[in-house]
Length: 78
Image (cartoon, rainbow, N blue to C red):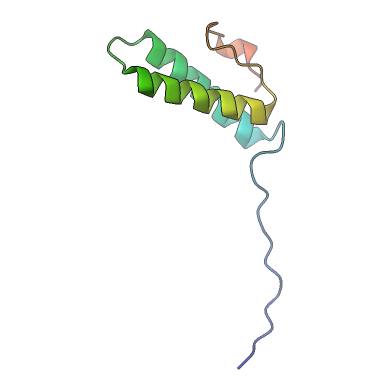
């Protein structure tokens, strides 16, 4: 039995530059990276993974990310 179903509406991926979800995620990952950087005893591979994730999401959001410069939350777009 064949049933005609209406086409599914797909949610857009949160990767468009400036998409609010993308910007929020990038901000959270930047904050996490800087918190891990300040914390003692964080393994280097975890710090590298956090830096790479923050950089990737910042590129998607169109945000400049400098891992050596701890930006305050006021400098990141809301």
